[in-house]
Image (tube, rainbow, N blue to C red):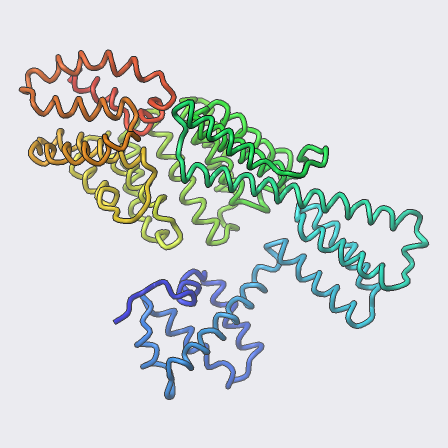
Length: 504
């Protein structure tokens, strides 16, 4: 029996809320005849299935349903669902509303009512401008120009109206191009990080700067990016450029600019909640890396208050974005304050809800959550549970986890094995770590020192462990001042663990 949940129609139906399902049924009953509503049976069958089962559908659908007929029925149902959802969201998503009005203007024009079409275009142009819908704004202007170029209208009687329209077209074209260039820049620099990771050496920094120069837009219009999305993409691009160089303070300044942009354009908090949540999350991540507890608490409260204000209006995708960013930020707050009890309690709550979001979450994010769960359990002294939470990371197969986090997970496993006195298994895993990590030259100095220190600990009598760690602490603290090592310690504070053993 097939249990694949990757069928697009099945995933769409499972993503529907109760109001959306109710609206779909009303839409079908209102617009379709009895013969045309046969696909509603398919909808009910899919809605009841826990996992997609193709063969079961063929058996339960009325009449002799072949695979070909089922495919056609599914395609028809998919289209009707999207049409119903479009009607549901038409008053919630401004771009859908503007597109509908633009369609109406095209219909009026096709009926020869071009003056009525122009009046409608003028009205929705202001809406597009107000809501920073730059591409739609340009499309509206271009349609206005088409009508003006083909028909004699009263526009010529209004002083300089055509000149203003042409100036607006030129400006909007430049805005759209610059916004596109800025998002290209952001995608490219983010892609560079995914492929190359952080820059640690002078040669790596030189390579980054050379790539960064090549990424810069070819066209310059002698105007600084001054629309909302131009600035948004620019700030994100520079944030990643600084972050890759481990310049957390520099990246933080751009993250603050990004968040402050929403204070200047406050309506955008509610028109694009996913982007606002993302900006707050990146700001909090950089505050976490710079260790600014006071500012972290301030902006975490801002995130929580915003979520409380808008949660009921968030669509399913935004609910998922909220789940990821808010929970990661809360966990980091407890880690920042070394409150491992609260981190552990919260991690267990998140773990219980994770399956509801798994289909919408990429593998890297799932593994990141598992690392946080393991770190919280380890900090609270639940070492066996920490090993259990690490299992998906240590046996991830072809799933991708950032290399530094993968190394941290392996080291955390070694610490758990040491704490549980599983010395034979620890010995084997130390050898595996040495073969797979040390030779890659991707580990930091402290990560390599941690591996070396754990290997030495394994050879010592218990009574000699504390003096040995006390001696090691001096060298570890000296290395901890480097940005790369500080980042490692934020995700696996080996110095705090050594101090705990020494004082214990």
